[in-house]
Image (cartoon, rainbow, N blue to C red; front, side):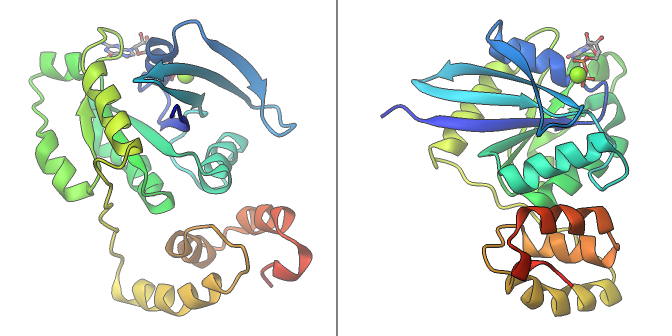
Length: 231
Ligand SMILES: Nc1nc2c(ncn2[C@@H]2O[C@H](COP(=O)(O)OP(=O)(O)O)[C@@H](O)[C@H]2O)c(=O)[nH]1
Ligand SMILES: [Mg+2]
């Protein structure tokens, strides 16, 4: 039976997200306004092995908190719209900086593939990336690609297909914080879980609460019936 999957593309600005989006979707794309806001999200789709993959190119951001409308739109999409899969596109020449966003996404959803893009540039600079070690340490597939040169795309499509069919699974390794933070997280998680209908990842929400993310609380209030609003 033919299935349909929603795939979000996340990453820092200039990591080649739109280039990858275009490679995957070709001409089948349109721009939609997101939830009445001014941020435009490009949407497109493609078929692979009989299944349809609907892609959304999220705004490029350095983090996914509530610092800007772009960050809120990208974060809301991942947490509330729950795509079946999120592709995190990283710049191979600036991995350390890029991993910040990757780790944030991994706290929000376990259904992730890491695409290390601009691998051609990294190779020119003599940067060697061992994706097998990264895969083991992160617990999700890591694929090296060059969106511009269209290399690694078939490996990426194969990973997407195998993840969606359940042939492979993600087991993201959680980031461990200092003892004090971990104790607070442990107190908050059971409370956060009591929220009826809450499909928001509890550890992530606990962390956001500890960070005092008021904009997120407002978003949750907007999206949940009044009696479930966090006090
Ligand atoms: N060398 C190289 N350049 C790339 C690659 N992918 C994208 N680019 C270039 O990087 C720049 C930013 O790409 P874009 O797709 O707009 O990035 P976005 O901001 O993440 O959407 C453009 O000039 C692309 O042509 C790649 O794999 N290799
Ligand atoms: Mg772009």
